[in-house]
Image 1 (cartoon, one colour):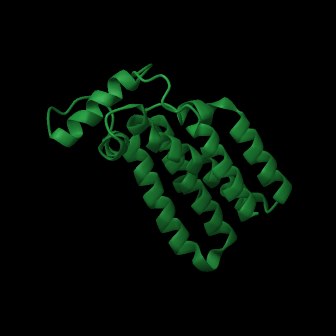
Image 2 (cartoon, helix red, strand yellow; image 1 turned 90 degrees about the vertical axis):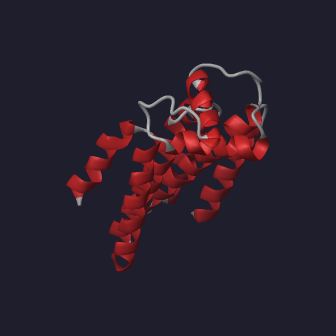
Length: 181
């Protein structure tokens, strides 16, 4: 049900964008990641070294496009949240081939607050989750469509690499497909 997956993901994105810029000042762990993202574009001091660069680069890209304000900080995490929902639903579809399970899972995932909260704050976790969900979607597609298996596995490997480039916590999740395949 690709139409349902797209529709639910777009509705989820619309919900994420409601009052995305409130609060207008950094909160929670944004105080760590925003200075790192700002330094990236100035080629200044490399701060927040304990995490890889990709998530901070995506936050920095939002700052470059929309300015150093709340919308710039949080727009790419919101987009990653919508990608997470879509990819997770597609992964379940390729795994189960159940229309009801896919749509119900999407509704439950969207109404649970983990993705919603993480997609509305400039942190690295949502990028890791989005790329991991995309990788698992491609892995499930590789099993379901073996005639395109190599392409799906290459895309899965790329997505796992992007997840690792966002946050090191993706390392255990990257091992599971290797063990499975």
